[in-house]
Length: 177
Image 1 (cartoon, rainbow, N blue to C red):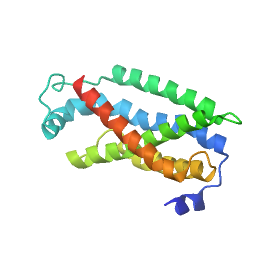
Image 2: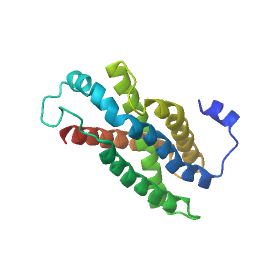
Image 3: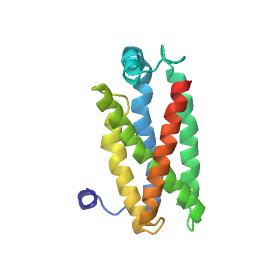
Image 4: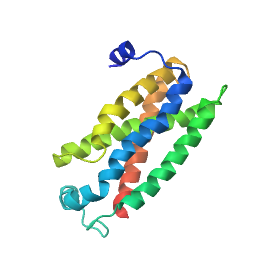
């Protein structure tokens, strides 16, 4: 897939690739933000039944649009801070590591959305932009980070496993709200 992406895109400056992250995040989360409350109102029961959720907080709509927007704002602020430090000339290994880790979380999130849609057999908020925008961006970015020696190729697997664990813990926490 990377060969296809490389064939159609010019080699962007790495600083540009870094600063595309907040834009990609906003495009993706806007799809979720606009649809989450109404989608849960219509599909929340099916979701709870499919996941066999029987504990408090699973009946009704746990995520309202304002509540989701607040979470998006916090994440967006964090992403911008990470990008600010990673995009600086001579960025530290720590700043580069934080950037790579946040990209890994976004990459794993693609599969979360895909799994939700497959599990429910229907559209779920965020799946379209996850596949069309987030997946190509994160694949390209992880590849560039390895090629630019920001991270070692062997480190990518560790990042992805840690990101998957983080997202799983977050999903369990969200269900318990």
